[in-house]
Amino acid sequence: PSHLQAKASSELFAPSNIALCKYWGKRDRSFNLPVNASLSVSLDYLGTHTRLTPIDAEVDEVWLNGQQLLPSAKFSQKVSAFIDLFRRQQDLYFRVETRNNIPTAAGLASSASGFAALTLALNDALGLDLEPQLLSVLARHGSGSACRSVFDGFVEWRMGQREDGLDSHGIALDAEWPDLCIGLAKVDAGEKAVDSRSGMQRTVETAHLYQSWPLQAAADLEKLHQAIARQDFELLGQTAEQNALSMHATMIASWPPLLYWQPESVAAMQTVWTLRRHGVPVYFTMDAGPNLKLLFEQQCRDEVLRHFPDLETVEPFGSR
Ligand code: PMV
Image 1: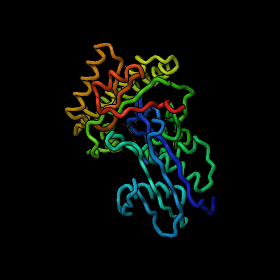
Image 2: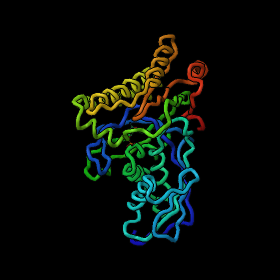
Image 3: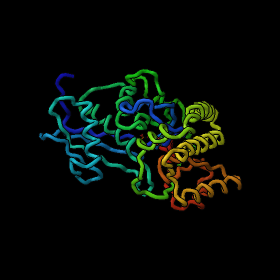
Image 4: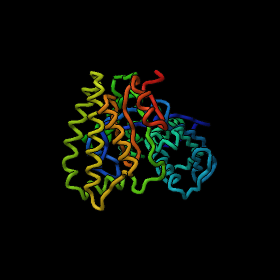
């Protein structure tokens, strides 16, 4: 619109998401266009609430979990640059209040839910009334994985073919899995040394092994669709775990090497493998950090918690 007007206040929520088939590698860095399609599950009520209030000022006022940040802070800069996509040249500034209800102790990144919630809040504040797929395209510009957080449940991010990225967005799958549980096994909640943007770039540019990644991801995506359609938990878990380890293999094969694991990460993997040897169907996935995300079904919850007493658990389809 030529002249934007904002509502007095808008507050929207978007869930965090965990990829079962990972997004790793960009074919276009300025638009966050992926090399491969990915598939995730959104974490129900765990995510980000974002409130926007128009203010009479010449810069956005950014708050994170109740604390006002300096305009020069990295987070404020990212948020303002994203709002620029909507405001263009106009003098329209906001107080942006971001609240993550993800327990910081869970060591889960909040950029996906953060940019998705900010997109939804801008859509509401400016009365844009955009279609969900376009909202997903916009959220993708903030952070690739944010395009999946615009939806609940299982979400596929179709990579698309267009150069403008308008066909690269999330699609919600028409499927539920009421018994599915995700456990957040924290190893270290500290800020990671290499963020996913630079990690991806390094892998794409330096790891020969990366050449096999798009094929692995395409095969895994297919298997995940089958697993979800048949509610085949073993297939879901095996595929997600192998996909995550394949992604990490490409990271380790980069130069300088990129190893996000800590000794405790490996110890947690071994606990998962021991549990499986004892007949407990539990699997893990990992992102660009040292923490594990466990996948299991409701009937194994007690057994899993016995071995991971500090686990934060979420049922992605719990409150439906
Ligand atoms: O959206 P980004 O740039 O934070 O990248 C996310 C990358 C992974 O978390 C490792 C994988 C994924 O698909 O979420």
